[in-house]
Amino acid sequence: MNLTRKIVEDAAIGVAVCDDLSQVINLQKPGVAATIWQRNLPEGLQSWIDSIPVNRLPSARVLTKTTVLDS
Image (cartoon, rainbow, N blue to C red; front, side, top):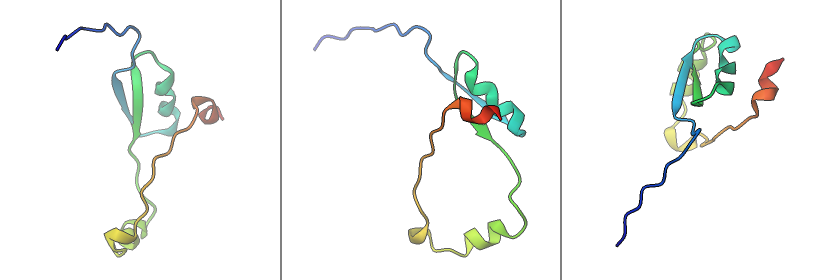
């Protein structure tokens, strides 16, 4: 087996954490691969979600272009 090292240039490796929608734009910065938007849930939502059996919850991954967030 041959092991070779591949150098990846300009790869996004960082994760930004924000608590305000205006900071989600950090995705456009070099080196940022993802943004975690920490926010409070509307009142009652967490208890409603907690009441749903785990096997009934959806599994999802949401991808969007940063241009959608410009507005």
